[in-house]
Amino acid sequence: MTQQVKALVAMAKNEPATVTTINVPDPGKGEALVKVLTCGVCQTDHHYIEGGVGDNFPYLLGHESAGIVESVGDDVTNVAPGDLVILNWRAVCGECRACKKGKPQYCFDTHNASQKMTLEDGTELEPALGIGSFAEKTLVAAGQCTKIEASMNESDYAAIGLLGCGVTAGLGAVLNTGEVKRGESVAVIGCGGVGVAAIAGAKLAGATTIIAVDIDDEKLARARELGATEIVNSANVDPVEKIRELTDGFGADLVIDAVGIKETFKQAFYARDLAGRVVLVGVPAPETTWEIPLDEVFGRGGSIKSAWYGDTLPSRDFPMFVDQYQLGRLPLDKFVTERIGLEDVNEAFETMKTGKVLRSVVEFQK
Image 1 (cartoon, rainbow, N blue to C red):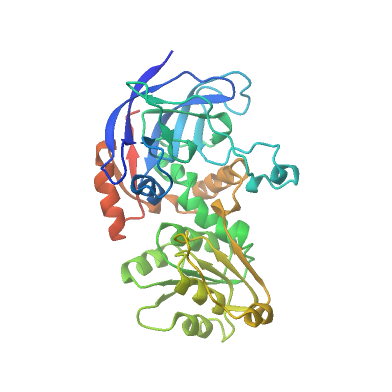
Image 2: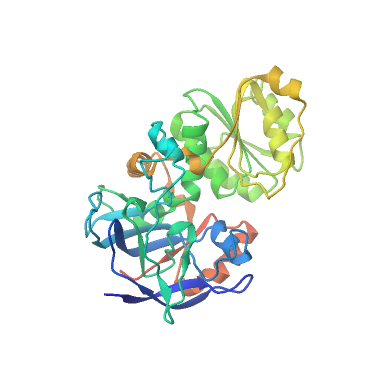
């Protein structure tokens, strides 16, 4: 039986999102109906409003969520009604060439729900990242639900729900893509939400020198709170030279570019040690290019990688991150700047642009 719930929908390009009623069908084969508890306000959702992801309006926004499984369809074995879950957009297929190579974290054919949620008039909705969780309830592929066994307080749901996207992108860029080792040095260029998550990941992994680089002193102070041992305001000093100075003249073992523009990528390339690693996790604008002499690429060795979702496998990584949070080693709660209602999301998008928040999180009534 179809249910009607409140949700936040982007009806047209560059127009404020609208709180409206949508229709959510019962789960079919391989699907799960999830009662949403929390949903973080992410830059990606605003990209949908701007038309930066496509023009398949109307979009059901929201994707960084924790929730409770309400019901499941046929052939669902990974979750059951009553399970606490974190939603993810990498529901691995098990059949594509990446999965068959034993690298499901790169799955090229991730699953979404087959049925469509709709507006009251029957217009089909396109859910953001296949999730659409700025809604009291949402329909997803069961594989988009990662079960969390740990006993949680309700106040923790907002924190763990953020693992669904941005926080995990930063953590994974360091832990998975960058493969940081204990005792290594890490520099992170750009201290927004993804960047400070990378800093928290470096601390979790045992990096001893963790350098935060930004042009905003407030963001740098926040980076210090989350694990940076050194801060560099690149508006005042050459960040490459300063990173070298802080690493005995050599450069960092791992440099994360969490901005994704030509200038910061070049800084990341030259700020690493010989045979060091560069990881690009900031999303570049279309047609962004970089120019580095090929002999420099050869002569410096090491590796240059991009991090897709931090090379994260949700079934493997989410429970581990939650465990580390509960052990006090991963301060996910510090990423929750404010708790808001669904009707406050448009305002939260504007606040997000100021850089004064890590995450605004919508909390739904239990």
